[in-house]
Length: 303
Image 1 (cartoon, rainbow, N blue to C red):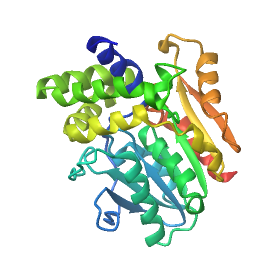
Image 2: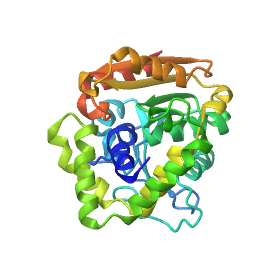
Image 3: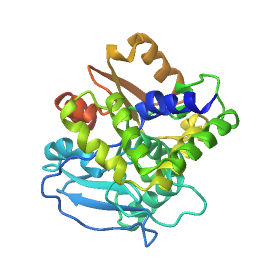
Image 4: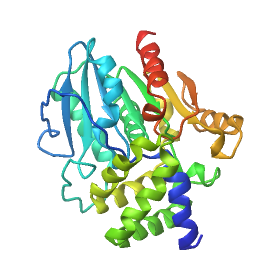
């Protein structure tokens, strides 16, 4: 795969399944908690009641959950996470290049130290991968999982026969290309990608700003990690019920049945799982279809 094809891939497939977003959140109750000193994420806490941890995607702000939080915080205590290096949360030194796995471990430590009992985890895109890691690697610390428009192995979008090993070359090329972008190229890249990520035009400028404001190295490292991490062998370890919510729109250019089949095949080793498709939406279903998404979450929580 040449560089031009890799650029097209990240704009049209990988980033179709991972997020760059920033919108406005109404008067949060900030309780900074930076993962037992590791500073791998910050968190704002809103409301009271049963605990829900919400994890946004690649280069996303916690504010992607604004509409959902408004409907949930009257009955639930929300923990709105934002990863270091994404949106407005400062990056941290990361010589190992690990973003996702270390964030999952840090959130697990947060659950433990804050004495949170079996929280619901809702993760979008990259945040969905973190949610799966929490469920498989820290099964005793989660109650239920909602995975929003995310696969357990992102490179399946490109190659259904991919393995972590075969993905490494392309992942390395993608990471290097992202790191080599000039500031002007980064802005143009974000604009082009956002057209494929959000169907709602009004939110696009804020989405672009969130991506541009994210740390380039953190983003590049996270994309590499997404492309080479295959969580399918770990799905059988998850004891919590899983709800997978995913988007579909005719503009994807493929039949809905193919998208349905891709998700079901990718999650075939999970034991307790349910799928919900939200139509007429791009990747950011919570922004493109906020009322329908909130309804799906409400039904999930009331089961």
